[in-house]
Structures are given as structure tokens and as C-alpha cells.
Length: 329
Image (cartoon, rainbow, N blue to C red; front, side, top):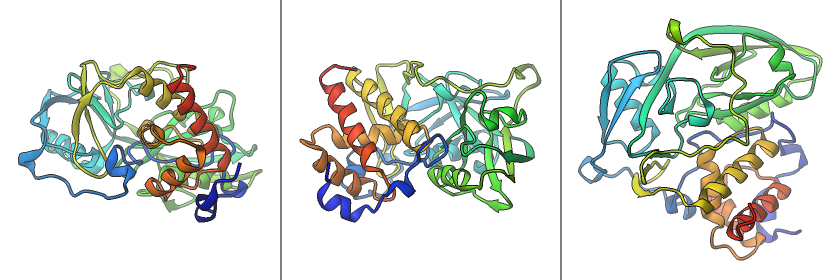
């Protein structure tokens, strides 16, 4: 199906597609949420006096006293508040989980925090340098990121090349590939770099695993399954974080939102090798009132022009949003 002027502007081709789990990705906090993302007009952070007066409780995942944080509008500011509470540096924080200290990829903090959620911050632990022989085109990794420039491993496919390298684990931050520091690189670019590595060659990857308390050491995790329920939040309202614009307190996601976001997130993994609930939520919001795929494609290009989405993916996302509206998923 043709996509009109969007097709001309967005020069995605088969070469740019992520055809398996390796290809591209957004970051966990990459896609902007809400109307500020849709109209492309990034708003400056609001003054502290105008931010939601909400207090959240937090701990370091490997063990710490409980801290109290408030007055943040996005993920980077959240990390700054957590770092201040525990007298650490913000770059020490790899990612956060909600309501569990475990490295549970289904409980990652993304674009929403339930008003009763407890935040656990996972900080840098052991550094690892691994040589990997790429015997297959796909390594079997799904990449995401923390919203502040750190790409990390969200899933390892069982029986894959990466699964055979037992020191590679879910939750590991990817710091360097073949000596190239990739901190600050978008996670879809990291996925593409891994995909583009030649088959039947050896490459070196530097990883940083989250710090673990001794009693928390557990068998290696493959990450959550795509079919798992991923409800975020225990309260009826959530604090919605945006890459641009102020945080807002909103009602808990509707059944339509949850189903559509999960389906789009599954499509992101299938086509682009990433999981990114914030990006998926942005796409659902963009497509909520669009009347046809062409209109949806042009709106996506306006809102998320830095992503090269394949035509087939856009059409499937449009179909998933429509199915959710009709209650078919």
C-alpha cells in the first residue's frame, strides 16, 4: 500500500529494517509521550513550583535505606533525584524497576509510574569484557534503554548465540562494541550495529551488570516472555513522564491502551529487535484518531522522524490499533 508523501520523506528500505531481534530500537525512554510528542513542539521543563507535588519512595535494588524523592518531570531528572537521595552519581544508575528489587524486565520503569509504586534503582556493578563468535546472523538479543543514554539487554532468546555465552545476562548495559564506546547511542542503533557485524567472525563487547546483593544472586534470567501481563502501577492514577514537556498525573491506562500498547511493543520486537513501552504508547496515541494508514504514517513521521519505520511495520501497527479499538485483541 502506498504511503504518499510520507513514503518520500522517510526513506526506509528493506536494508534499514530490523528483520529479526537484532535490528533496531528506540530507547526505554526514547519516544516522546503525549501531545508534546505528537505535535513535535518540545516544551521546556516546567518550573519546580508547577510540577506535581508527589512523593515517591525509593531504594537501591542491591540494598539501602528508603529514600523520598519528588519534583521530577522526566527520567533524567528522576535519576538525578535518586542519586541525590543516596549520594551517588546519576550516571551510576543503569535502570529502575517498579515494586521489585529483581532484574525483572516486565517491571521496568518506562513512561508511567503508579502513584503508589515503589522505585528500585539498579546501579553499576561488575564490568565484563567478552569475546563472542557470531556463528549466526542473529545474536538473539533484544535491546532497550534507560531513557538516559544507556542501552541494555532486555531479552536473550533461548538457544541463540548470546544464550550460549553464559556471562552475558539480561540487564547488562552494553558499554562498548569492538572498542567503540556506545554510551549515548540510541538503542535501535546499537541493535543495528550488532546485526551488521559479519557472520563467522569474532567481536568484543564490554558490559556492565547491575550490582547485586549477595543474597539476591539468582539463576540467569532470560527476561520476561512477550505474553506476560505488564500492568504498571498499583494506584488508579499514574505519573506520566515525557521526554519533552511536563509530567502529568493521569488516569490508569484503559483496557484499550494496555492491549494496543502491548501489541505494538510486540511488533517493535518482531520488526526491530527492541522492547519500548513508551515508544509503543506514543504510537498508539498518534494513531488513536487517524482515519487511514496514510494519515497515520505521516503523523508518525512528524512525531518520530528520527526512526526509520518499514512500511510493513507501519501497516501492522495501524492494524493493531484498529483491532484494539474494535476489541479484537
